[in-house]
Image 1 (cartoon, rainbow, N blue to C red):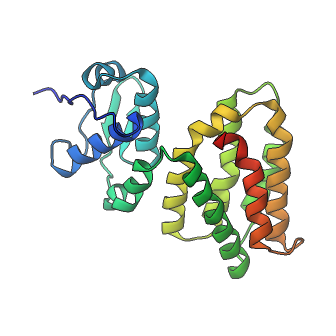
Image 2: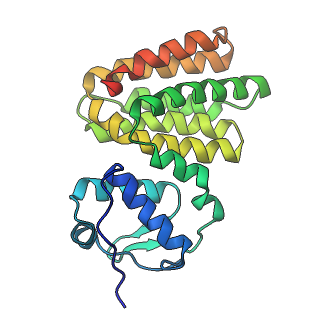
Image 3: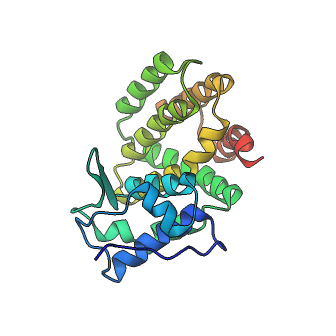
Length: 230
């Protein structure tokens, strides 16, 4: 019997509702590890939505390890599905992703936590340094907004990994994947210098060349993120 979904409740953001539908089908057993999902077109028709929210929800589900995309074959529920992939906290973040202002506020304070953890524990930052130097070479005006956002996020993922905390890493990755569509919307060539300047500031904090001041750090992040809120 072919898998079919009902049209969604538009009281939530469309992409969030699609993610919730997949989660509910996993929890009630309608979907199981290894199951093949309908195609993008089939999901659009069954759910009564456009292509954009379907693709956004697929990116989120792929990022948190719920689905796997196999080229030429389609989308599948991963065989390595872990309970953490269905953690209520993770899905709570996704369900509230329509409140972009509060999400960005949470991200700002979350990144202060990251910096403090790495500095306090004197963790290795070599990978962060390598990613930053790579970004300096690769970020250029010829890249698309999505490519610029992806390169930007490489730095933040490296910071997450430097905490050596699996809970921080998983929650952080989810935050960045949810916020990524807004990053793509405001990314253009004029942002390159500001992005690199911010990452350099973070790096100097981690190197101990700048005093760690949580208030100033949040203010810096507010300035960087204000375009995404507008």
